[in-house]
Length: 361
Ligand SMILES: Cc1cc2nc3c(=O)[nH]c(=O)nc-3n(C[C@H](O)[C@H](O)[C@H](O)COP(=O)(O)OP(=O)(O)OC[C@H]3O[C@@H](n4cnc5c(N)ncnc54)[C@H](O)[C@@H]3O)c2cc1C
Image: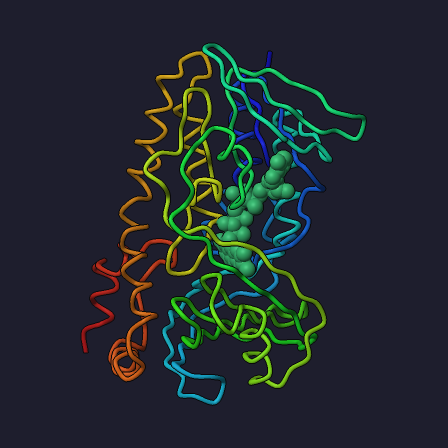
């Protein structure tokens, strides 16, 4: 019997697999497709990424570095309110290659990571779990002491374990143009309901345009995206789409199962970013959970919430500003723009001495 069956080899699953295997546990990781595909992410991350990625990752993954964001209450022609640092704020990386590197690192640490293995069912028992898997050769059942649901926003493990859904799921749409742009700024447009649209320069890998909105609105996400891109007057070469879960539920653990990453909605409510929060939670899971002692699942809940809950709560407050009336947004952006001292993953840094010093005239 395995110690852990990990479902999903995105950043959260591969990171947990690597850490658990390195700690000596017997780990089976099941990925329904091919690691890194399909793409549904901007790969826009703080420099903390380099402490999670294997050696040499920066050279292999980096497409552009970003020093700040220009906020707009309207489209491309509207006034820009820049927020910036004199050092790198964030990195634009090859997200698909990141997933492949993290999966390789998990394998090197000893995890048995299998692609084309789709988990269809999970049963929990007193002393083990049974996981039903569709493989290229048919349907199999594997047994483990615990199951880790790292299977993204629409999580099979979450529903099989009867765990609650995230508070909200946004619809994200991305498109890429062939422009060559290694600019220092991303553009953020507060022109869609309850979130934003963005433009990210990716160096010689083109420019990405995207937006995220709550589902069910009129016009829908695709129509809004077309309108946004038309404002820039550019042609898209390719598109992709995905869901962004926001608002973790009160529990992400069951009797012998636990969720990490998007399955647990461990994301930043004000950007939708989840790569680093998911891997942070994965490290807590690997450090805290002993597969022979289900009581240690409580330690995981406590540890990841101790690290991320305040950031997520403050992130929810920041997101509220996206829905303020336009004149209020303009006044606020004009007053606050300029040099900043914040860390993009940590809203608490808004209250840091470094940032407050920058705010003083
Ligand atoms: C449009 C968009 C833009 C984004 N931009 C950013 C960004 O710039 N920065 C950032 O930090 N985050 C961004 N995110 C969020 C980020 O992509 C996620 O937070 C991150 O991918 C979560 O990692 P994960 O490992 O939890 O889940 P995922 O990356 O979704 O990985 C889950 C894995 O599980 C597999 N899987 C699913 N079901 C099964 C099953 N039944 N059996 C086996 N395998 C299964 C999937 O194939 C997948 O490989 C963006 C998201 C979207 C939609």
